Structure formats: C-alpha cells, structure tokens
Amino acid sequence: MSTPVVAPRPTPPQGQRERILDTALDLMAERGASATSMRALASACGLNVAALYHYFASKDALLRAVIEERRYGAQLQAMPVPDLRLPPAERLAALVVDMWDGALAEATIWKLLLSEALHGDGTAREVGAELLATLEEGLRETLPRLVPELAVDVDLAARSVCAVLVALLVEASLVEPAALHAHAERRALDLATLLLPPG
Image (cartoon, rainbow, N blue to C red):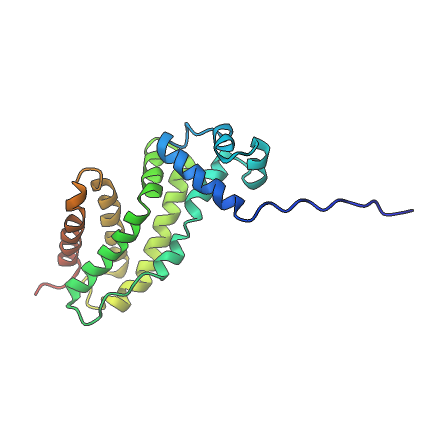
C-alpha cells in the first residue's frame, strides 16, 4: 500500500501578515474597528477574505494583533536612559517625556485603542489593560534604578507615570500640536514634584 503524496502547503509571501496588519491599522484608524469589515480589509489588501482568516481566526484576533504586534514591552526596555547626572526631578521628567515621545510616535495605534475601548469593545479593553500592566511592570523595574530618590512607593510611582501618559494621550487632542511637547514637559515636571522629596 503506497503512502498518498500530499502537496506541500504554499508558503505565504514574506511580509504578507505585516502588510495586512499595517493596512488594518490604517482602515481602523480611519473608520473605527467596528466599521472595518474583513471584506473591506481583504479588498484593500488585494486578497480574498479566506486569505485573511488564514492569518487571523476572527476580527477580534485581528484587532488584538494590530495592537500587540507593536511589541510595547520590548520598546519599553529599549527606551533611552536619561542622563543620570541630572537632578532627580529633571531625570524623572526626562523619562516621562521620552516615554511620551514614544507613545506619540505610535499615536495612531493608541488613539484606535482608546476609541475602541471607549465604545465598549471588549478586545480593546482587554488588550489595553494588558498594555498598562506591561508598562507598569517595566516602570516598577526601571524607576528604582533611574530615580532612586522617589519619595513614594514604587508601585504608586509606576501607576502615576502610567496615568500621566494616558492623560497626555487624551490631552493631545485638546492641545495645539505646536504646544504639545511643552505641555508634556510641564505635566512631567508636575509629576516629579509629587513623586520626589521636596527641595
């Protein structure tokens, strides 16, 4: 009895998944995730819908991948370290502003995440909560090394930095673009005043 010959499964083109995710992010940012159908995405990618389901089991899986593929945990670890010779308040403010600059460079994904979560999308809420947890965990490790002068518990400090970053993401829609960097610096220095010993 001979063994049946099975044709090898065709290898998807290199980078196809990444191209789908980039296109999905553009469409979702423009229309919202709920208004972006798999059919519209397939059309924008020049694929059939079945090809999308080869990569993503559902639209929820697609939204999760669009956000998670940004690898924010790795980005946090690769963040530039502020000059350790700076005074503590300036050092902490520099860390917050660097993190804000990183978030601003990814503004499309953060706005999508916040918008979908505000509209009740469970996947966006879940992924957002996971991202905040990853960010807080990274800060709990980073803050004591970079700013050992903290006057508060490191957990409180990590949560406070995250809260300021989220607030800045919301405020970015309310502040003139030309004033945004100065606004972020002011918020970062305010936070340093709260988290560091007086004087």
